Image 1 (cartoon, rainbow, N blue to C red):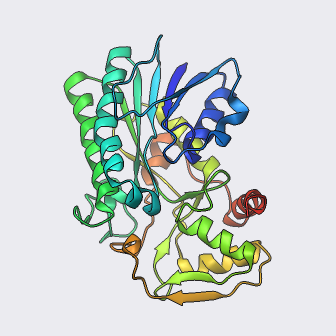
Image 2: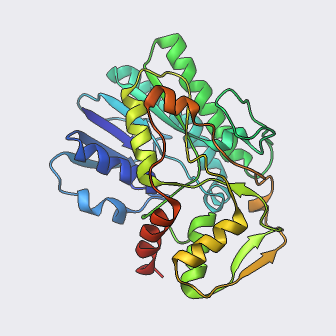
Length: 313
């Protein structure tokens, strides 16, 4: 296949590019580098099956030649990013999705949208199945990301129903691993950064809010299987093992062999307003239609991620 991956210089986009190259496919990577980093794909530059186009997908897209699939992963994805770039976040989820869908229609390519567990907002059910409609504040500070992704899903399904486009939607839950940014603002790089410096790990509130963490390679495997599947409706890809943020902080300290302590702070920053109190995927659909479930244990994934960050601190 020849595939277009938008957001190719980002954390997930770069790992996806690696996977498709490894499988023998050709990759056209596209990124405007607003949050992406060319270092993530430097090893691919010059590869005879990889080409890179610097471009903002919120504008008209031109790609010469045929495309068999388009994977739309372009978007700021952390609270730091989408609070700094609220309008580009909305535009890449709306205009960017429209443009990439139009390109897929023109090229007769299969389309895969990177959606998110944030479509569920601060959920009232746990775990969250794909049939749950969510509990989202559309005008809160996180709404620029949540609603951009919810709109993107609606637009993708509209192209599927109206134009007969082959579409896939992955709802991604918390994912971590090498190539995340230290200043990402999300809990994994924050905790690892603090642990490696011997600083206190800052936990909002009492740390009882829950998350579930999957290693990037498990996610990439799920996405690859989803693209090749016949499943047209959203699929959760995440780790169903739920833990409190406080327990996660202790896990990071242990794996990093750090002497850091935990410091509890009261959330005043708007980045944590509407922060979900719990997050856990129901992956029964992924098991059924993709024969997929996560394989990497938290301690093993953290060890690999911490080793990567040691050189960055």
